[in-house]
Image 1 (cartoon, one colour):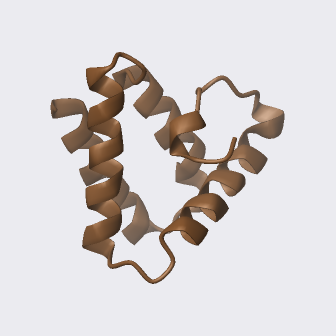
Image 2 (cartoon, rainbow, N blue to C red):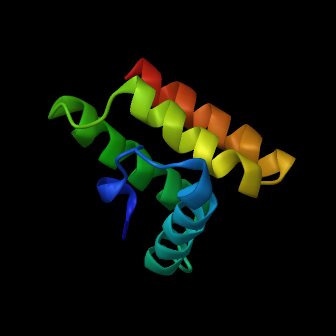
Length: 90
């Protein structure tokens, strides 16, 4: 997987951590130097596109969150929770 758009949520426990790391690495590289607001805005835009065209479901969002959660600190988890809530409500 190269970016958020390619995440399919179909991972095994064995490769879940590596895939999550790859996602974060790719994302960090793409948005290096961008503000937090810009990053969140981009995530929401991509999620809205996915939901609109039927390629992103709330279950996919949950799987993505569960994959990333173990790699985040409490502050990052809280921010992710807010973003996930917005995505699900859109």
